[in-house]
Amino acid sequence: SNRIVQKYDEHLSSVNDILFIDNNRRFVTTSDDKKIFIWDYGTPVVIKHISEPSLHSVPFLTLHRNKKWFLGQSMDNKIVCYSAINKIGRLNAKKEFTGHLNAGYCCQLDVSYDGNIIMSGDANGFIYFWDWKTTKLYNKIQCHKKVTMGAIWHPIKTNLVATCSWDCTIALWQ
Image (tube, rainbow, N blue to C red):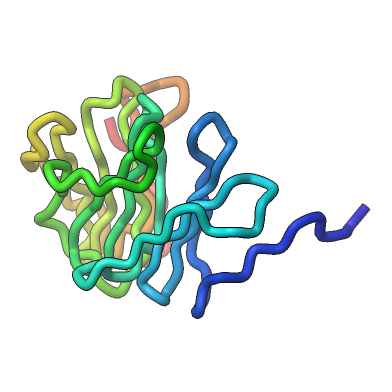
């Protein structure tokens, strides 16, 4: 019908990403205003406002496979983790993934199908892999000559990873 049924307009700058959580009853939005908002689906009022002094812009979000957490690619070269159920929007300070360079880029991140590995692209053409439980860097692979913007596990062959880059290439990795 091409008509807006609900409009959400609390962010003060460009909205970067949106992610449904909590059995699709709520969704998360991020913006260049360095805020993360959590909304009830169908209600244009923010139910959780995340705006910490140390929070940078978070241009990419993904839901962990267990659906209990959502992860965000923060522009200060780390991946942050927040609760997606119960105390929604609570920062999990123990789940911070660092070591990659992504400041200034919206590098995709993904979670392995068993939920044990977090993966992210990098400004220097790497893909990084961290252990979910310990947050320790598991491995990094140089896969492109320029920024690795996309990194995602194959939906059926879970031992394959696809990457894409500003070097105009797409690669499959095993």
